[in-house]
Amino acid sequence: MSHSATFDLVDARMYTPGAVIEKGVLEVRGGRIGAVRPLADWERSRDPGVAVVDAGGARVVPGFVDVHVHGGGGFDFMTGRDGSLDDICLYHAAHGTTSLLATTVTAEHEPIAKAIRLIVRAMKRGGRGAQVAGIHLEGPFLNPLRCGAQNPAHIRTADPDELRALWELAEGRIRLVTLAPEREGGMEALRFFRERGVTVSIGHSDASLEETRAAVRAGASHVTHLFNGMRPFHHREPGLTGGALLFGELTVEMIGDGIHIHTEAVRYVWETKPRDRIVLITDCMGPAGLPDGTFPFEGMTAKMKDGILRLVEPDGTEGSLAGSTLTMDRALANLMRWTGASLEEALPLLTLQPARQAGLERRKGSLEAGKDADFVRLNDDGTVEGTWIGGVRV
Image (cartoon, rainbow, N blue to C red; front, side):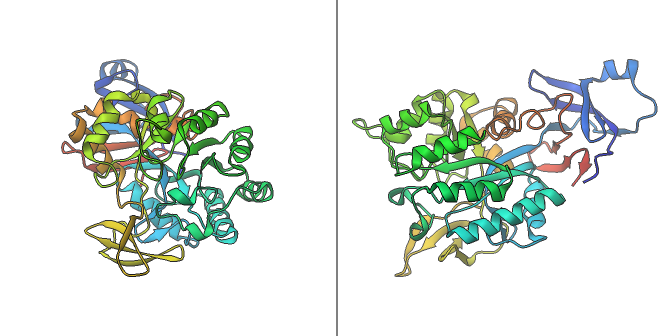
């Protein structure tokens, strides 16, 4: 990716953290944002040597940051090969995602290790499409009672030697890890990752409210796909679901496809949870963007019908939901439709807040001076007209 991009994007409706600038200018300098300012200010003191791009009044928003995505466009981070990661990243860039965490699933040690090696190699090389900004290790240290579409045959307790091996393979690029703290070795794994600056998420977990509270005290600050893969709320034992809604330290993920969570449940979270503690994710799987059909899925089989992925049980019946085929632009449109949120209110859930949770907020997540020039141009109907990463249209 070129970092020599230098131009002034003028006359755009700019969505900045503090305000919407109706006639704004985004100054891109060497792939980063030099300044965001009103058109009138720019006209008084513009640099005449810099190329000008007319936005024609279009809406310009920060690029979306997806901290939980497994694949797309027919490819998967677990089974990818050199080059195929670009296909995943281009697929999501077409829907406004500019940064993502390549997310693994529960498998035996070697397939996870192979995926990590491939992701690290791709990150070092750089590629096309959305930037792979790190790794989200989802499993294998989960609770088989709440496995969802994670293969229960490969779920295991956290072993210090395996933790160290995976960390060393990733060369410090793990930014988020999902684990079940109530399992044997779970709290030790939580502390291992926290000591290394990784955001720890509670997920695929049967934790009680008190076990959730203990994990928060030990440094857990995130909850993987709220309501899915966890003990449901009960008035006598609120469990992880209750803790996720109650504890201010926990930021919750939501899959905004209208399938994983009822639309009114999304609205409930929007109206009750502090909004700066919610992030939208896709949990998107490899078959997204392909025709309906049957697909291999980590030693199991998944079937996609009408864009909905479900495991196929040994007897041929439908099983658990197996991730989604959601994209971030659809998640944004859905949230606004279900909650009545404005674009300005909804954007942080796809930009600054996921960037914060992934430790990327100094470079990503908002249109501010000094950050990477990652931005998206939206049409009036909310569809993505163009995606720029480091000032380069992808």
